Image (cartoon, rainbow, N blue to C red; front, side, top):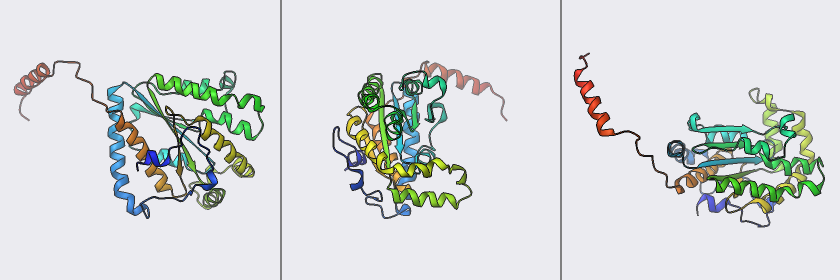
Length: 280
């Protein structure tokens, strides 16, 4: 079974995140056993993204969501390190600016959506507007409950314009999260990531789980599917996300565009210039 089929959420399926093993690693016993495969995938992903950029016919949007410490930053750093910056962008969704807040909730997401030839990664996304606003009662249910349909239509519009959308929920448990917070406390290189809000949000972990389960059920569509990725083992998280992105890019059956010049003529001119050049 492909990674895509293994982790894809079927439209309208009832998802119970508590029943999913966050420590699942498939056929691989540990990081060392998967190291060679991951290295090959890095090269393959880089090659496919270069082809996407060169062909300039379609685009790919990768959405990363998950609890605090689920590994969104780490996934970007490790999975997408081989991308050519000319055709790739990352946008982190934080608290809306005044300008963003003055528009409808999807305005900023559309602003950062990929153009043809681009692979864009959303670190958090427009889904915050049916997650944090729900958990913290920032807007009434009569408002956020209507946003599921609006999100589906927004993503359908992107898909019709040539953007393929892959949405990843990086799945960890409350215990996984607590252990990662503990490691941050003892790692000087990661202490800068600690905020009081992270620990305050832990009190709402169950509420976030319920909110995410609704998101997965109501917004996993054929044109913008969700994938629940077991993320306790960071290396497997990276492997699974990489596999799904590669499988998707390969399905595009992309081709390099034909040259815009007469290659024979250019080659003739090159050889003539080469023959006249002084020997070094």
